[in-house]
Image 1: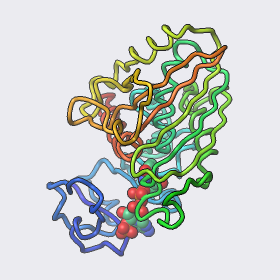
Image 2: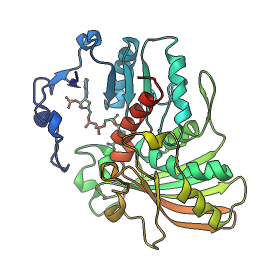
Image 3: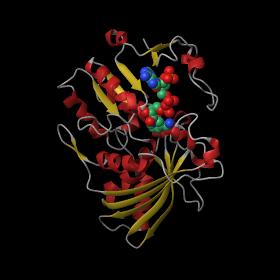
Image 4: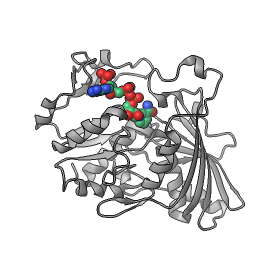
Length: 323
Ligand SMILES: NC(=O)c1ccc[n+]([C@@H]2O[C@H](COP(=O)([O-])OP(=O)(O)OC[C@H]3O[C@@H](n4cnc5c(N)ncnc54)[C@H](OP(=O)(O)O)[C@@H]3O)[C@@H](O)[C@H]2O)c1
């Protein structure tokens, strides 16, 4: 049994009529003609539903997701409302899978649980940082992002504001990058995450690109590393657990050694096999300058950075026996 839920505005409509799919390739057939219902307390009594995927606006997700978890549902959320709650995992299945264990602590106070995934910029950023953190440790990282329009949802930024322009401000984004990154790289205890001591500085800009966030990253590692060791860390990064997940790409990171890549135009659908297109990030222009590691990374913000990440988190929960 599955149900599609939205606000009263969409209630009673077919999915195809309730959602704007004109910018996507193809509406998924299995849900195309399904009726959309309004989120209503009656769903809380439906025992055939166990798992809820939430893509609610952050401003309303807080209460609704808590109500669902308190009623026994397992909530996997793309919204920001609970990301920084001490006992809620901020999870990227192939980066910090051990943090999922926090749901056991949540279940001491409620029958269900909430698992969140990070902001789209952070999902790519953290995937690029993880191999360096594992191999060399990180003291400081400075990140500058060039973020696509689809990250602001649809219809998003007005065309007159962005055509032929770059906007060096995305409300709340730099703060999210800094705090979410420290939580994901943090150490799990029984009831919370002790944030990483890494010093993160982020500058985020909106650019006139449709999909794909490009990020320029400068890392000061704890221990020195040669360029060969850095390349090896990126090339070989794998997560043993996530390899078994149905939506996982064969490699979370694709390395390009071409001098002018990655680019949104060519590289956003990185990832193999075919079902995992857009699920890998691409890292390129890797350099070692003095004690700094510099590189660019590209993440598909609405695939790897949003729904793809949420789905992989639910697959991990199933693998680990939490579903
Ligand atoms: N776009 C991205 O790249 C991205 C990346 C990462 C995370 N996120 C996060 O993901 C979430 C969804 O983003 P989006 O761009 O998909 O937003 P969206 O297009 O505005 O969709 C929001 C959904 O929430 C429903 N909703 C709104 N108010 C509701 C209410 N009071 N009761 C029940 N349902 C309600 C809407 O239904 P109706 O259409 O019926 O109103 C719609 O289905 C946000 O929290 C966003 O910050 C987005």
